[in-house]
Length: 200
Image 1 (cartoon, rainbow, N blue to C red):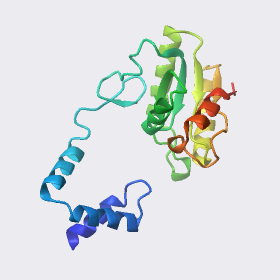
Image 2 (cartoon, rainbow, N blue to C red):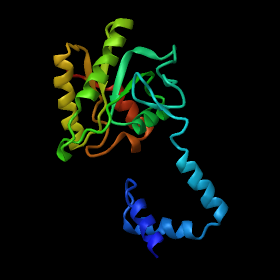
Image 3 (cartoon, rainbow, N blue to C red):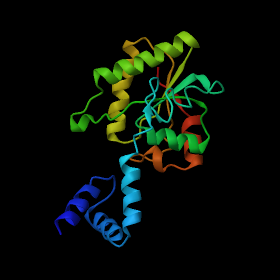
Image 4 (cartoon, helix red, strand yellow):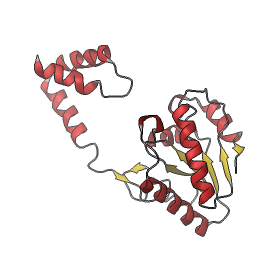
């Protein structure tokens, strides 16, 4: 079944989906009726249709700027740098942080993907805008506590230091080493944010 095998190969590209899981999903889809499959295909095809990347922080939203950046009640004197939009969703669901965010994007030094000039410029521009607007902005680095997250952290420290940023903190290691924000519970996130340490 060539079409089936192609589907399994495509599903294996999903995070945390191995060969067995991909086959289980493919067999599940094989048992569904045409209406379900058509609707699923439509939803996937239109997933990005009405979504935008926020011009300020890089978050994904139905509006640009996103609802977080445009919310006047957010603490605009703190900005939390995260690896990806999933981390924003996790922190927002936990309700332990009420400041702004900045999505760093994929940085994988071990895979040869360093912080790009474009991503660096995007971050510095965002920080400069906030500094001009509010002054005295605290930058919280919340990259995931694993090897590549640590390497991204040191890259960020150099970038922020060269840009003249002075008030930089890092979330505390209430998070397990090797873990990610996505799977942390509320108490752990609260401890990580609340016990952040000053690094610059």
